[in-house]
Image (cartoon, rainbow, N blue to C red; front, side, top):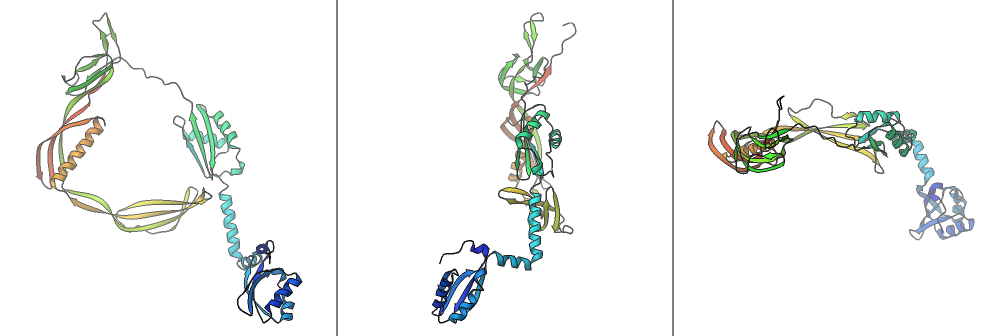
Length: 398
């Protein structure tokens, strides 16, 4: 038979019928206009079938007439679910309250982010946004359309060429495009470029000014490399800002000492977890109270927000893993210690004199092993920038 419309909403029962005249009962149901479906014989004298809840009491006279007996195997549909919920009223009330709270919390603005600003202070932008109604704990339905908010913020924020407002879930992002201003070149007084150290020039490029040295020239500290005075005399001279790049070979001597026993921190595998319920920008600790049992530790934080249809809700779970840390010792061979010390010296050279500096050669002048350490004196030959500025000072008579 055809399944009645909305049988799940109206409610139905799965019954098992027993008797010698089960087929007579099915015919009688059809004659009476009582719909049954999913009729499935299980033996010669038993069969399973479904019928609507409203027709359940009308089945009894037909059972007596045909001499059959009936057993309810399953109750299906909304009416039975409502009865179960009524028996568990407190659970139902809690579920309803939870979803209501979830709906209310997802209807609030929890975070306001500002991106793209470099010159404008974030605090000033948030202050103007608050005047337009964009602030944490604001109802989302009370906000104007994003286009209207963008125009309002753009008028109130000088120095912006475009302001965009985007809402994603409970977070509002204000995108700022600052107006481009013509670049103001700083006022620079005439100057020389001089050598900041003793070196041998390897390359010289004068963009502006008069070069006074050539490649492979040995120079001393303070010697003029590119002059800021053009001309052949006081009457026919002009002061300019010397510009250019000069590189040279410079020698750096390092006294290194490297311990043969190196200490480092390792995880022991012991840990303690702390669990928090996150509501917006606040976290409420639920588990993991008590003092930390470790003398030394490191904390790793994991945040797992609750999402609904790819929207991050202001409710979530946060776990802090407090990991025990211990100190481990590693004994190095002398060659490994020497390599480690030289690598540290090279990093120091690149940090001080520029990452474009090149180590041309290195030579260990002296080394010894004493008191659990390796001592070295190392001479590095480095190609680096050697020019620095020297302002030109003119006398009053000039």
